[in-house]
Length: 320
Image (tube, one colour):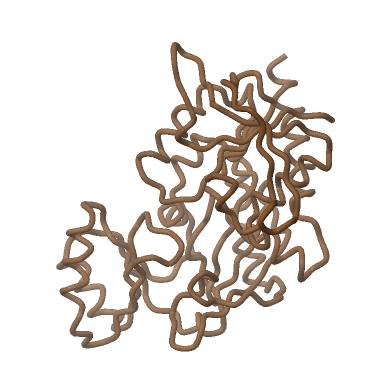
């Protein structure tokens, strides 16, 4: 199968070729002989009921400092493209949400992965609240009294922005922490959005698992172990990826959420699991492919494209 693919992403010049999942998805697309186009969210255009992008043909190679070549830009009609990969990184703000509204005009005639309406309706820290018996004790509110009552009950909690990413703005609040009021003031001054509070899980010292699901099925896992003295396991703040396997509880969590992911067209998803609890369902621009590939000797990007090809044929069959 020869597909015409456009990747909506942060500019290719900014990516880490040793860790970026979009990079290996693009490499695999080229290996299969697909035509691959690159554009950033700012280059997406909606005009007169048409969805366009000022896109450039892209070639990739695993060569540091020289990992891409972009051709001449042209205005591309995305309704004539076979597949669009929605892959820019969060924050999941109004700019991000607007791109999902625009791409919804072409999906599923042009297959957008992940489904833009489902991405919009499944923010990482909110989507997980729709499933029973998967989360640690959790509060979402902008009410300082409710947040304080939650802290008084659980004593040791995590506070974080509801739409944050990458571990930014994540704080552990221990019993009798004198910074509690200051943190609430900081969050309220930064944004009108509620915050999310969760009971601190000491199991995080053993790591925060990233599990990759393709079309609702678990296909690989790594554990991200936080640095000494750090409660965040994100790799860009010092977390270290280590090889791991799926526990019985991991599999149970995936079985609970998997069918709904597939139903919503969330084909490539990364979930975060600490101990026995699911903390986030990442649908916007999941990462972890390269780390799992290296540990397990697999090619998850090939499995993703295999599934995209099947889904593409299914959508074309319905369209005809």
